[in-house]
Length: 79
Image (cartoon, rainbow, N blue to C red):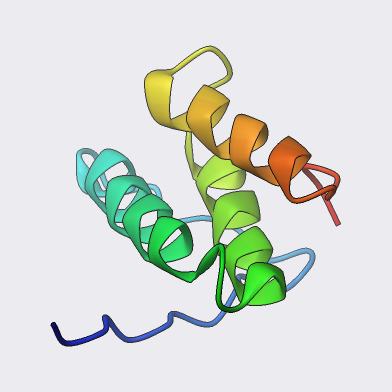
C-alpha cells in the first residue's frame, strides 16, 4: 500500500482556502493523511489535524474528529 504524500501545514497567520466546496474535501483528505501518520509520525499527524480544525466549522464531523485525534496525541488543537 502506497503512502499518501504529506501536505505542509498552513503557516501561522495564513488564511485557509475559501473556495466553496474546497474546504470539506481538503479537510477530509488532510484528516485521512493524519490518521495514516498518527502512529508512525505523531507530530506530522498533529499538524495535519490542526489544519483540519482550521478548515472546518466547529461542530462539524471532521472538526470534532480532528480535535479528538489531537487530544489522543496529547496536542493542543491550535499551535
